[in-house]
Structures are given as structure tokens and as C-alpha cells.
Image (cartoon, rainbow, N blue to C red; front, top):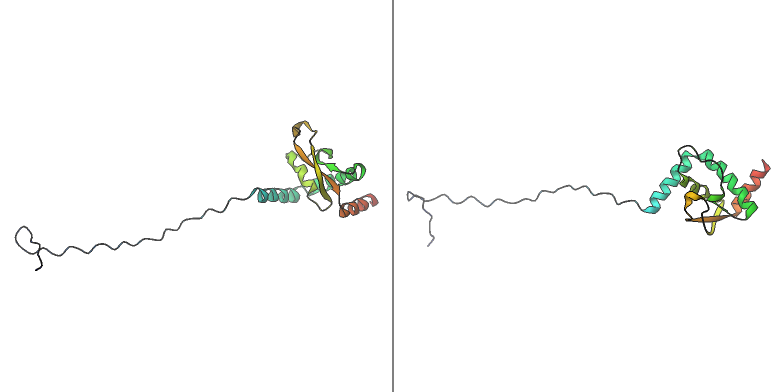
Length: 138
């Protein structure tokens, strides 16, 4: 026999309310983009320098071509032209992001602000030699 719940006055109590149905709301979470890699950051910076400082880079690459032809190799320390106003000394690294130059090893920087850090030496590629010949014709 079913037992019935009575209220204080002997009347049958109403049935309990049904248990609430818990619905889990879908929460949209923003997924943070993956942080950029060091290589991606470097490539973006080089692309920005190449877009913003075309004239300076053309002049510096011309100097680098001549130095590499005379000395056999060239480094950022060998480029002795003034930097553009407000430019970081790191702009010198963008000079060698060209098919004209190929890495040929490392040396210690001789510039005081370089603190004897390792910098790359480059030699001319076939395209670099062709660019040098074209430059010397002009």
C-alpha cells in the first residue's frame, strides 16, 4: 500500500514538483590564436623593413655587393653607411635577405654596440655576381 503524505490538517499534500531539468547552456569561449613563432615574427619584421626602407636597402645592398666582390665575403659590420633616422641597427640584417647573398659562416662583431656577438658572413651567389656586373655597368 502506498503511504500518503498528509499536511498539518490531515489533507493529502500535493505531489512534489518535478525535479528541474538541468540544461547545460553552450558557452562560447574565444579561442586565443596560437602565439606567433619566432620565425614568423622575424619574417614579418624583415618584410616590414623591406617595404618601408626600400631606398636605404638598395643603397646598402649595392655597398654590400662591392665589399663582397673586393673582400670575398661581407657582414653587417662592413656596411658603413648611416642608418635611416629612427631605425634600429637590426635593419642591417635585412640587407642580406636577398638572393644575391648566401651565408658563409659566422664571425664576432667588431662594432662596440655589437658586444662581440656572432654575426653572419655572406658571399655572393651567381645572382649577386650578375647584380654586381649590372651595377658596375651603370
